[in-house]
Image 1 (cartoon, rainbow over the protein chains, first blue to last red):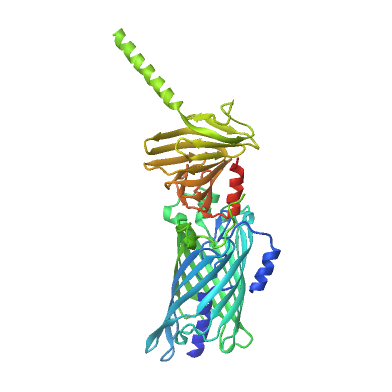
Image 2 (image 1 turned 90 degrees about the vertical axis):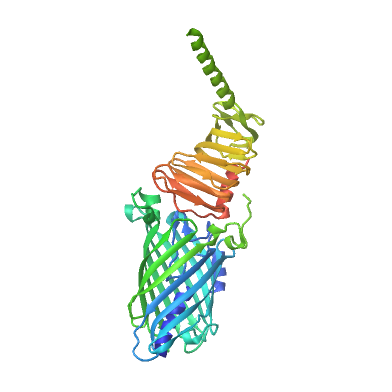
Length: 319
Length: 201
């Protein structure tokens, strides 16, 4: 059971954390890459909806509240039959292109023939910098470094005692600049990171994933006047795929794959809802179809003139 | 019978004269200008009044700033044309309709105590202020319009689809002909600075 829990906690740690290039690298890149036009989960007229499994593609002022549940195959007393997680991520822009995310949450484990346990997840902090924004090509790339503070959560629910640091890269590309007609609303986002565990039994991990999405808001505002009901005009069908594998000593942690098809919905009015099925493709990931739902509050839209809605340091109005 | 007809004709004439006088009432004044600009071919000068029905044309490399009767300021960028379709200030109410034929303008609206509507129409859609006061930009270029909001809230509605979006402070969006407005996004200060520069006299 402990091994299974370790595997799951690695997955959950990834799901919770969403991830992360070391500060020096960020500073180096900052100096090398031309200044982007702006920082947000948008490139020109392409809005990239918030992902539910993968890290967000760029820093922003927002609040994410995901809730997920995943069944597991329990073979003996005390094995986990279901894992339910609730967390919150507060994302704050420091400058227009540099942001920080703070995250914590709780996990509940239902156990076979044993009372369930509930406990805190490890606290996590992420620094993310949007290094490239190319609006005409609907492309952006961010670099990030994530740190999970080991021992700040309850080990009974899989929160590890050892900390972990993960540098990573996210990118997003819309296909709206290509002459492909009704395929122009398509977009892909991706992430890759290398998680460095600080001591046994926490292995180093390679975490990677991508999403494919078809934006109906983009279709009706950039491609064609398609007669659709109002509620459909805000939908973006999306499929996320995530992959995690240990590198070096695994300490019993196995490779995990997850496929998550679903939809996100946004009317462009400061909030966004998403729901996805979580389909594990390895036993370590789970044994049945789970569900994840997420509410996103765009604080920069809802409270545009407040501290939570604006970057701490922003350029002056000086044309 | 003849007297009755003459009476009706006089009443109609009176009404026409009254309506003409109302339409000719100045609703704003040129407070700053540079380059070439005019009103129906008449060259405007600083201090000149503008009236309902006027079409203000601003040439390339030129700028114009109007101080309106309610205290609001409208700045028109180079190579722009704007028509004052309606600018009614009655008591504490304000009802404004501008037509941006092409180009870019900045509208800095003061708040009024009464009811207020402030709309700018373009070929592809209409932007209307949804807050008491606002500081915002609208551009009309060919078959698209773009709105950026520095302060307040502005709604942008597509003429063809009727769909609209609400744009808060620091956000902006675009509307292309025959389509829904693009969902708004946060604008960088650099983007605002570009339009501030264009509308600065």
